[in-house]
Image (cartoon, rainbow, N blue to C red; front, side, top):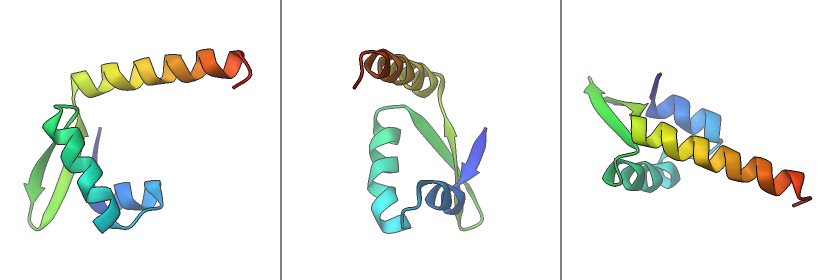
Length: 68
């Protein structure tokens, strides 16, 4: 699934200037990629990013079941 940066900002309820450094870090770690479409950047999560997200969701679930 792909999302333009503007949509990610809306979904994260965060301005682009605050979200951009986070997206840059995710890209450096190979968790997301982007392509240019005109002036817009269209982001996509990588397989490695999906794996990391699944691990994070599992950790969250365990912590939640422990009352955290």
